[in-house]
Length: 207
Image (tube, rainbow, N blue to C red; front, side, top):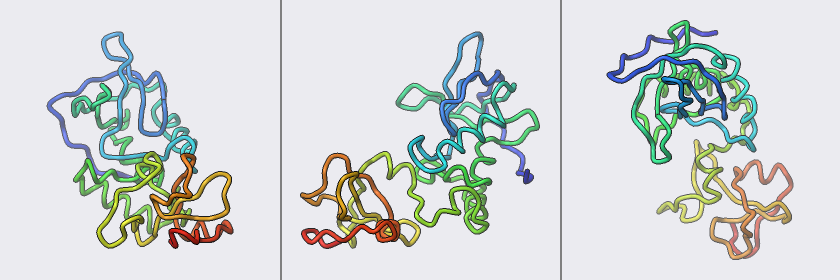
């Protein structure tokens, strides 16, 4: 496994055994006899229903499950989970391994970590993990089921040079966000993926 830079010390930290892996970026760690849910800081793994979601969970399990780790506590999130960096027994960061191996995105909305940015760029250039899929969709867009509007592309999002459109599980068209023909079962895909799957453009919203 690639060498990663040393971690930055934190004012708040604790040690504990990893007793559960919820998904790639969420684990349960024992602290004073209680399992504490940890959301890995600065990264976002694919959701379980996305491609590479299961692989990300397996990767985290292989590196961390059952092991004594150190948590650099960054405080709670709005769901009551502890946001933290997970330091493995060898002193390296689980968060950074996930990004370096292409099993997580750098979550730049909540992180200005330059090393995560660099690791993501290197993984992307090497087509590691999820970056081997040209139609990959970030989990924050997948979770939304819709996308923020942008001035130049009012119902589309340019993502790493790709346009996001929406399809449904039963239709054969792809649409702009907000199209009246979209159902509640819509989900986002890249425009290239929609075309590759044989979807045709909607004649109403004309994506």
